[in-house]
Length: 470
Image 1 (cartoon, rainbow, N blue to C red):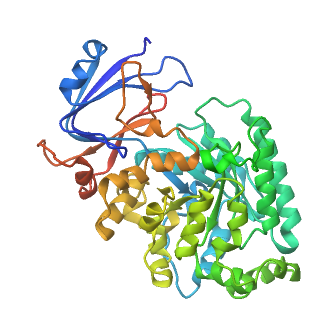
Image 2 (cartoon, rainbow, N blue to C red):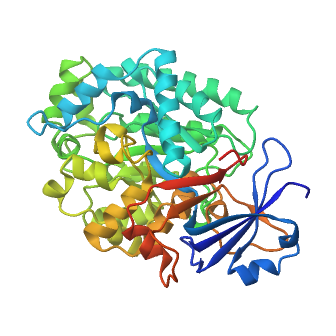
Image 3 (spheres, rainbow, N blue to C red):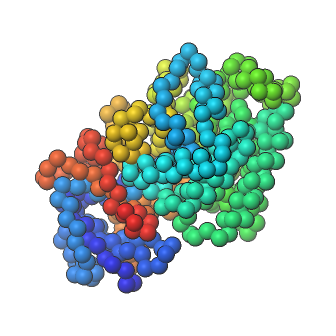
């Protein structure tokens, strides 16, 4: 290995997998070839890192008042809505009224979509994010590969989930458009390098996509790479075999969703009638009194999904999610924005993790972020702000929060968790996705770096990511 070696000497370093040191040093080697990633050679106290054979030839960057953490993972975002900016939620219009606003104001032409995603990428990097689960929206109901193609040209890793709608009279039309688009993208995927963003598939939600659409999405996901184990293989869930095409959906997010699935009535029924896709055939699978998780349970058991939000979760829903090995992407400030706790009670993310569910963190879109935390003042759109919100609101454990924003997010998106931790470096080195610095007020001995990260208001500074271009 001949890449340049850099040693970062800092006030402290901590990750979400049990590593902590204060003071701390991190030894990193730049990639030698395009498409390669930086390698973590060692991390620990300065004395420990100095014993590494490569330490003597490293260039040193002194960061005496910085705490170092791994690059962050945003498990659920809508980068193509960045141009809209933060907006207040009108409770009188409800969630359906908010959706109408998004439908009206989102970009529908390819250049405009690309610009909005590029802006979201910049805000993500400024917030210390190096991997994202982005939702490639369907403007005017048409799935678009523009967000994915924009994301794969960027420095961000992760997945671009191609979103589609397919219910009632629009079911076949919506699914056919999604299948044609995703297969076009999968052909292009053959030319990608290892760490470029992957293409995924997102049936929007269980109240906007019929069960047939979900099942067909699972079929395409597994059929795209026939050498992999089939979805019916009994070892798939037991051993966590990754799916060829990542899958995601919104789930159990709103009262309107719960009402429609249970009774096929309410604001969402009115919306489907208004846009001309309602059909009596919808009643064949809805209006059965089921919760959103119960309604989707069979599909969730056939493949690994990332389920965004899951604000509406009773004990049975948590039990079912744990059985299916679904990952939950919780977006704390988005849930607060829509008043989810007033309708469903506090989010049960800690109960979910206690049941064995992998819970990651997301920001959702910039639309639902307060302006001071959405890149207007702080400079970035970051899951660190989500962590800090849970720490201050709930007293959540700082180390667990770091795990939710790094290795848990990686697991949800099918990325290597080792890319997002600092501990475990050895003389052979391993890839690392990025390194983030957070400024502390003064240089002093720190007994709990993770807690201080949550207590501080300091923004993030991305020291490097992927190709060392930070």
